Image (cartoon, rainbow, N blue to C red; front, side):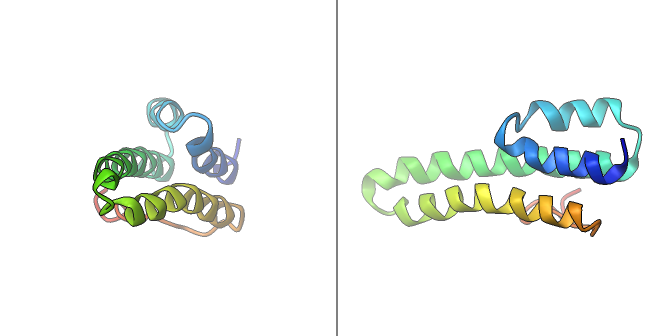
Amino acid sequence: MESKGLKVILHASAFFAPCLVPILFYIFIDDKQIKRLSIQALLFQFVMWVLVIVSGILSFLLIGLPFLVVFLIMGVVVPVIGIVKALNDTDWDYPIVGKWY
């Protein structure tokens, strides 16, 4: 399978297997760009889960409710942007964690 298809699957995995697919791609795919993107996808999912959990806890105080909404929307929109960028064969890094790895 070509790199474009692998990138699309990697970004789309946020909706069906957010941890499993990036880990498997990192282990079994030799392409350096796919490995970098799989680490970014895994880190992004982890950071988003932490942010949603903290916002959910703080939403009982009504402080975290706006953040919870923003992070939930971001968890859906960012992978869709990644899918579109991958279909256009454009290099793209995940926000928040793109510069970490």
